[in-house]
Image (cartoon, rainbow, N blue to C red; front, side):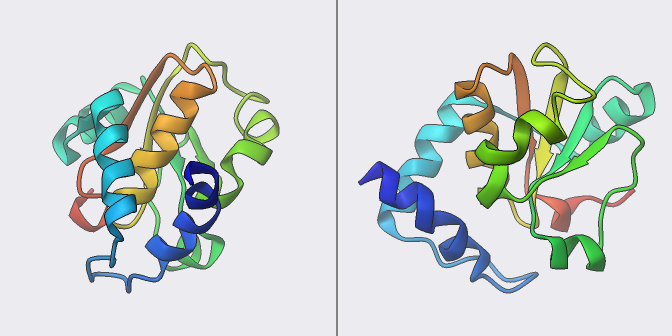
Length: 140
């Protein structure tokens, strides 16, 4: 069941319209609760501070069409769709950074970044968190 959810979850979450809450199944809500117990959320203000200090790698896990509409401008940033995270991360992340760096993930609203942050932790990344409320709640 978990494998099937991993495959279809990005589709279920991305079905939400920008600015609207995504429609989440009960199974997805359970997965999110589990993921939130494993990874830390940071507030938009904390993210601003960390960006000013240059201490993080920012990871945008939205889809390419979303990147074109809006993004957080930051020098140390990786854009990698949630659906391709496990496949593309070695090239897109480890080419410039390592698993000891501090990563903050974000998406439009929050769910994809929570699950992606959990997955990075499972892949051996040590310092991973997600932007609470997603890009929707971030004002540079």
